Length: 57
Image (tube, rainbow, N blue to C red; front, side, top):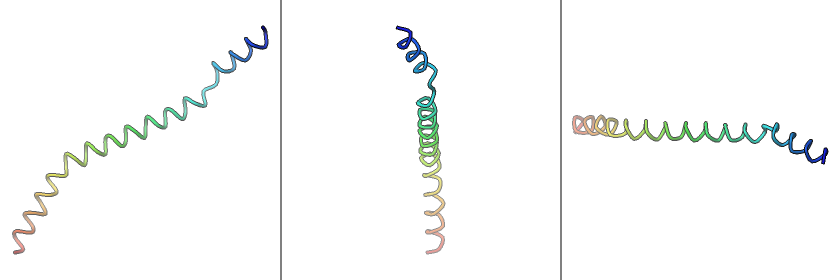
């Protein structure tokens, strides 16, 4: 019984999986922010190129 309690205690203190999860959440957050930023600014960039194209012709 003592060995089982010791093993359960080790599993509860093990934080290696938490680090992987944190990196995954951080990567997901960065990807979502990039998508939001590119979507918001995409229309403005398109308008700039359209204006430049019409002025060159």
